[in-house]
Image (cartoon, rainbow, N blue to C red):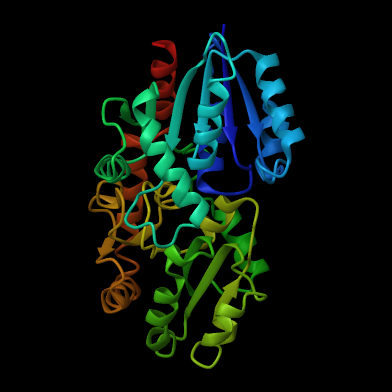
Amino acid sequence: MKKIVHIIGDLSIGGTERALFTLLTNSHNQEFKNYVIVLTGKGYFLDELKNAGIRVFALNLNSFFTSPLKLFNLILLVHKIKPDILQGWMYHSNLIVLLLKYTFIRKPIIFWNIRQSLYSLVNEKKTTVIVIKVLKIFSPFVEKIIYNSNTSKIHHQDFGFSSASSFVIPNGFNTEIWKFNEKNRKEIRNRLKIDENELVLGYVGRFHKIKNIGLLLNALIPIMNSHLNLKVVFIGKDLDNNNPFFKKFDNYLPKNKILKLGICNNISHYLSAFDAFCLCSNSEAFPNVLGEAMSSSLFCISSNVGDVPYILGDTGLIFPNNDMNALRNAIEYWIKNHQALKVKGKMARHRIEDLFKTEFTANQYTALYLNK
């Protein structure tokens, strides 16, 4: 039986964390035994993985350089497991698995997982930029670099990452979880005091510069003052009333029409309460939230980033990146034609079922692991 150790920064509610959870809970190959090591903190998916029977170790290793004892404990833990494969998830964890490899006499196989595009390094932290440059140098010595989008693969190869070991495995979605549910719709809308005749545009993500939330808020100013039946719901880390960023728009947007819910569990329930979904990022690879919204039969409006054109196909609207007028026109178009566009939402779900189900993703990972 092959032992696979997955190393990830944390298990909070995010696209990468959800992708790991989805993979491990849908991989039923008896030839593998999976372990997860969480470097910094625990997070929402820790208990979820444990409940699924996955061995999870949380180290609270907040700094690799100021916590030498915890770093030593990490090395001891990995040596105790004796993995056949070390799988990193995102840049910093990829660097960790690379370093861990050279502490073994019988060196495990190294897999990297990269889940973002490289439009620019401007918005990255200085330490992250350094890590990316180090990974580029050592990329020829990694067995496989798994990207979740062709855009991410191209960007990293253009930056200098090895192309010989590159492999693209798109995100997969459990369509039994991510689906429209009338009961959930009524329950959430009642809780949020949203009338059934009101339209809801939803956003799910985190507060970060690359998510370009200001673009959406600015685009909404004239729309919400002329369409009084429209409400907008924001869900995600720091997307709440404590974030001072939203105060800039207090005098321009109706307060009772903008709902900032912060971190929420059971995102699938909230998606059923939406009538459309908007993604306005400056940079994405394969945005999980877009696939989840599509699987929930939502009409989607998205910026032209990452593999969005391939993911969305002709089931939604794509606007040029950072183009506020185009985004505004797209939202206006949806409001005007929302009844007819419900058909597009159903087409979006069929597209996920045809191209991006969890089984497809899990089978591709299984094939890679079995061949090594």
